[in-house]
Length: 75
Image (cartoon, rainbow, N blue to C red; front, side):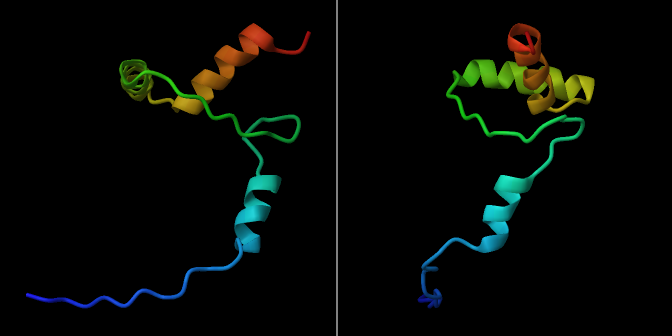
């Protein structure tokens, strides 16, 4: 069974819409522009955070943001 799938040409530049979304997005309740933070954590910690936040009906990002604000909030 041979199935041919044609794949279009690779884009040569980033779409302007994606760039605008990253630079202009607004987080609910954020009083200022936001920056993205990427960290690596153990899978077991991710699973624990995910299951507990899901059980409370909250988003992981919201709870982690709250923890960071408690520790490093405006001084």
